[in-house]
Length: 195
Image 1 (cartoon, helix red, strand yellow):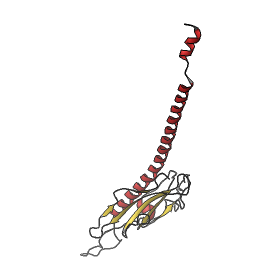
Image 2 (spheres, rainbow, N blue to C red; image 1 turned 180 degrees about the vertical axis):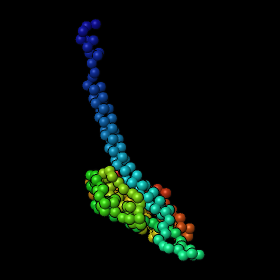
Image 3 (cartoon, rainbow, N blue to C red; image 1 turned 180 degrees about the horizontal axis):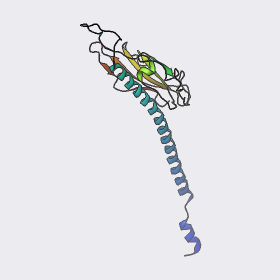
């Protein structure tokens, strides 16, 4: 066997090299798609977690009994304690972030530091100190999901890719007028999840 025939057997053909390059290209495209999907999923999980936390805050606030401050005379009864939904909170931030994060302001009277024992974020005992991709809101009554009166809606609205199409996540709760029980939606309403 001569030296030239040995080197020809060890070399790759142009077709084999093209097939390997094509396979690497397909794998790279799949990896890029997977990474983008993973990053978008991580961003939407922020919205879902915050909507869940606001909903839990609303449910906890409703379960707390509120009573009027009063002096009760001897041999008489106080006014009955009642359960009440928190009144609406201002949306934070007051605009929908477009592909960027918003860092909430922690000063008293600003962003999540607004409200009192019956109103807003302080009633819900909800706050966020980390930067957020979404506008967070709590409404007594509902807007996105058209829930009935005697209800609330916790929502997150964002525009992750800054293309003008909004992602919306919302969960509602409604008070049963007969039993006085707070009934929560079984899952979060999602519209345009990865926008």
